[in-house]
Structure formats: structure tokens, C-alpha cells
Length: 109
Figure: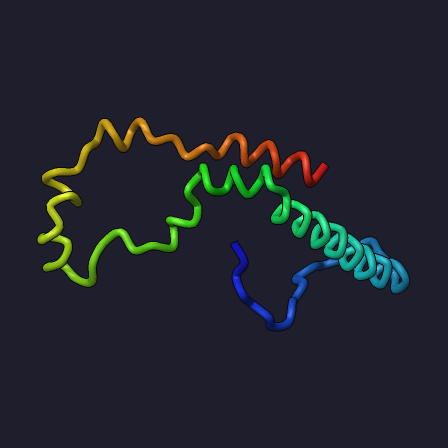
């Protein structure tokens, strides 16, 4: 699930007010260090076969797919959007986010 964004990264971080000049630069260095650690862990997370399976099970890739047509006419023409919508079937479809959440914690911690 890559965003494809290749532009610059911006860190909106304010060092503690109690820091002196050197502390401000230490804070900036710490932010960059944390970013690089998390970047590495995110790459490991995305390449983990168990995570990939959990992502498929959670159907996150389907979130990018439009669920309604363009405009009211298409929505009204789609009987599965309301008249034939199976509420019980929808209620039984879990998103499997808990497994994904635990895998994220495993990679972060």
C-alpha cells in the first residue's frame, strides 16, 4: 500500500522550550534518528508475508475502490446500495484489523 509520494518530507516538530541552542539541534537530530528507525521498520512491516496476508484479509485494498457512482442518478440506480443491501451479511464481515494491529505492534516494538 504505497502512496507513491516522492516529494520532500517535512517534520513539524517543536523542541521543548527548556532546550538551549545545542538542545534544539539535538532535538532535530533525534527526530531524524526516529524517522529513520521508523522508516526501516515500516519497510520491514510492508515486506513481511504475514502482514501482507493480514492486509489482504482486512481488504484495505478495497478502500480505494469507489462504492457509489458519480451522482445521485447512479446511486439511485444501484439497488444493492439500499433496497437489496444485505445488512446481516455486512454485519458478519469482519475487517480482521486486530491481527494487523498486533503485527504492527510486533514491528514497532
